[in-house]
Image (cartoon, rainbow, N blue to C red; front, side, top):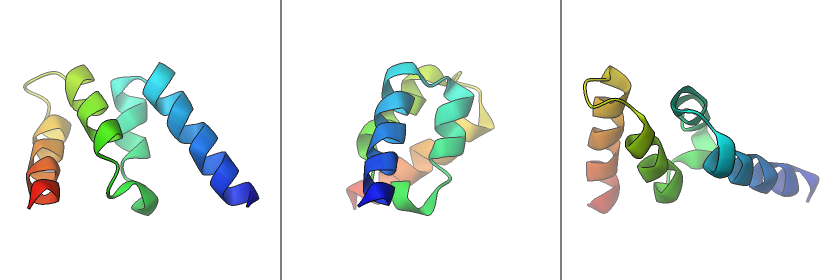
Length: 65
């Protein structure tokens, strides 16, 4: 129960206040695999020429399948 509460708090913090780099690191956690909101939030913040953004675009494409 504590773990889920901490995960939820971390997710909310990342979505509200996370930088592009914070969100990138957060999205490397296994438990964020299906978190499309965090993924799309990171895509909005990352520069268009970022290799990290390219990786997340590919991940978003796979998530829609």
